[in-house]
Length: 219
Image 1 (cartoon, helix red, strand yellow):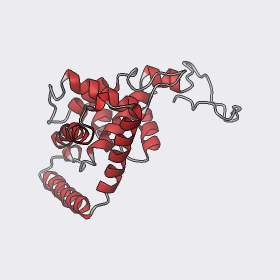
Image 2 (image 1 turned 90 degrees about the vertical axis):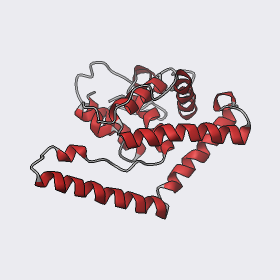
Image 3 (image 1 turned 30 degrees about the vertical axis):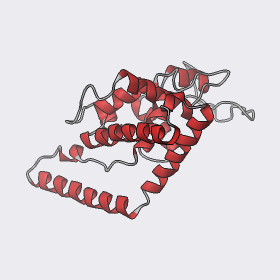
Image 4 (image 1 turned 135 degrees about the horizontal axis):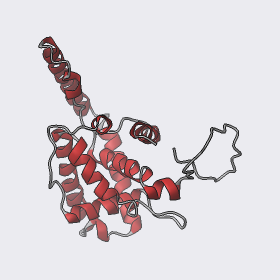
């Protein structure tokens, strides 16, 4: 599976566009690339968050086995814009603070039930956030600014200007969830354990028998 096929499959799963996907597909690094965005403890926390979203099952490893924390670090450092990086890292700090305030202990020490409840609340918060008037107005103004930058650059015969266009970031938890699914279903663990995988499929068979409960195929 090539990059575009992997991203298309995850985008379909999420029902939206992946943050950072354009830079990933282009194989280039935005000007905002940074190193040292996350500590070792941050990576472990991202693994725990990912494992809550995709826990291990008796026949497949979860997000932690797929090292989604390290995957997030790489994509955020190499493919996210400076603005997207800031939203994500600020969001991770907010998550830690909110968890400590609500439960008096770090996320990693919560019971599985509390971890799931906490992330479910964040998921609902993220869905509500992008429908608020404040977010919509800020995004509209940002998009207009980006279009103006593109027009201005094009007027100066800078034909690479379209690659400079940025998208307004969603809620930070949307990014965490996207990266967890993207990292997991493009990992060896996700492709060969959670999905059915054939290294050399040979041919397309549109009438292959399906038995209720079978895993989806890896693409």
